[in-house]
Amino acid sequence: MTAESMEVLGALDKAKTQWYHFTTIIIAGMGFFTDAYDLFCISTVTRLLGRIYYYDPATGKPGSLPPNVSSAVNGVALCGTLVGQVLFGWLGDKLGRKKVYGYTLLLMIITSIACGLSFGNSAKSVMSTLCFFRFWLGVGIGGDYPLSATIMSEYANKKTRGAFIAAVFAMQGFGILGGAAVSIIVSAIFRHAYPRPAFQVDPIGSTPHQADYVWRIIFMFGALPAALTFYYRMKMPETARYTALVERNDKRAAIEMGRVLQVDFGDFASTGNMNPVAQRVAAPEYGLFSMQFAKRHGLQLLGTTSTWFLLDIAFYSQNLFQKDIYTAVGWLPPGKTMSALEEVFRISRAQALLALCSTVPGYWFTVAFIDIIGRWIIQLMGFFFMTFFMLILTFDYYHLRGQPCPNNPSKYCGGNHIAFIVLYAFTFFFANFGPNATTFIVPAELFPARLRSTCHGLSAAAGKAGAIVGAFGFLYAAQGQHTGQPDPGYPRGIGVKNSFLLLSIINGAGFFMTFFVPETKGRSLEDLSGENEDAEKETVGSQSHRDLSTVNPV
Image (cartoon, rainbow, N blue to C red; front, side):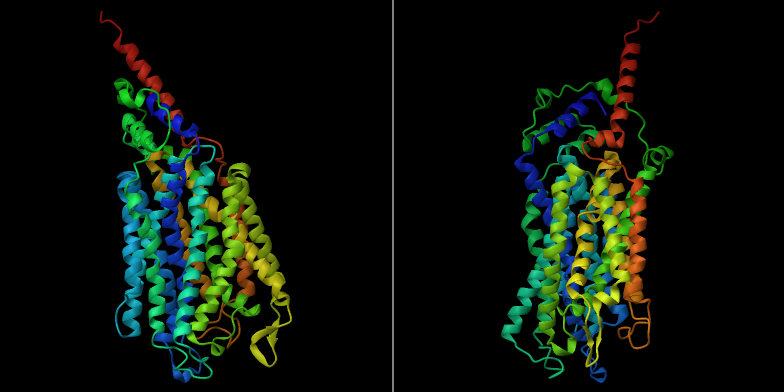
């Protein structure tokens, strides 16, 4: 890094917060709104898909997705997300953030619409095409993680960088809320237009033929917010840090940043006074798999990958327990007592309430305090309280939930249902005002510009590996321990209570792995990555080269 690069990047670090920063938050954040919408809206329609395509009159129960189909529909997008995080993370460093940024959003738009158009007349064909399109939807979603985080970190000044990156990620909360809201609205409209009796009154008539349009509309609506910001994403300039540090074009970095940010680079942008010797003499650049990277950033990468992995096991598996939580507090009656569209409405309403009361506030608490408290403290505190509340849920589970009612075993009598839902909500609150946000922010700050997107992608991919473990593993683990308790098609598991205990241990492990992650608050990206240290070596090398060139030959 040359002295000119340091001048450009130093000006960005000291730049005042401007309108373009907020514009970037919206442009990048709409991608995360779409990410969360598409990943979480599946939970509002999963039971509807079971009623439509897998109803078996012999069971006397509403149709439900078989275990393998449920795992595929819920998990295939997570697998695609993992692939997208690694692939687009690498491409973001290889080709530039701007060149590949628009393609992730375009892929999400196309595949969101395609999911709603999943074709075929049989359950097998519809589920197969839905899984195919959701995999590629996941690839687009995954690509958005490293690129959005890296772009926002490289645009921001060091004083408010954490809040800006957190604000981009916080759009996930609105995406979860938006998915639930759309599901509520669409199901309410169809309920009003096509009223149907409960399943126990008319098993076949409880699911109208028009219900097949409901889940398709909900999926396709996810393309709208992404489409609204696609044009603006394509018009964004390349980040100054990538242009200056990776492409080594200080003049263009200054010119492009000067167009969108009111930053004073002196006469550098107009004259381009670049020292040619300084440009030629550079410290050797180390790669991702080099010993130098391992010495400088190996433990940091271990910290970012392991904490994200452990966090996502807990975060994504918690969604599996919502059915028991909602049933226990009376938010979700037994399926037999509802029509198909009423069930969609009630599940969506419960998800919206939980998001509104715990998930969304948690994200924005992080935005408000991350540049005051710091990333490390927030992450440590989040893991601690997640562990704490999970342990309470574990050891007081039956007292909080209550026991099956004698005249209706599908309901729970006694217990403290208000405390149950509050404790459960607090685990989500401290996940979002904690490691769910910080594990996204810190990898975008620690690593050199030429490896930043790749390392963030690897950290995020480790998280999605944890999400796959949580979504698949705990889907089976949380099943009842005794015969007759597991859902149809599932083997016996360890039960919800023991699953909470296991998640407490996982959260505790995340607490201790946080000690491998340094604090990044208030420091420039170049200080954190060691690029300023490299710049000093370049400057020494440049000076030595100039001194030798001025020596007269004997």
